[in-house]
Length: 84
Image (tube, rainbow, N blue to C red):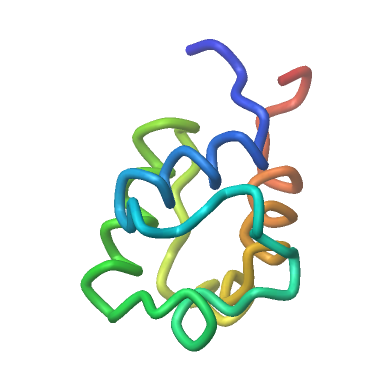
């Protein structure tokens, strides 16, 4: 699997899940559920989309760490395989 930039992966996944979101306006502090209006199903689809794109699974116990755009990008960056 080719390494994927975490920010690009998050942006691409958000465009698929919520096409009305303008990637140019995303801020690291944007909360996925409150600010971007993702419901619980959208959030789960986002997590699944990111796992497929990056190979990084986010277990349910880690969901509190990925409630913002920045948290999600940081989580993916921290959990990349070595050398990726």
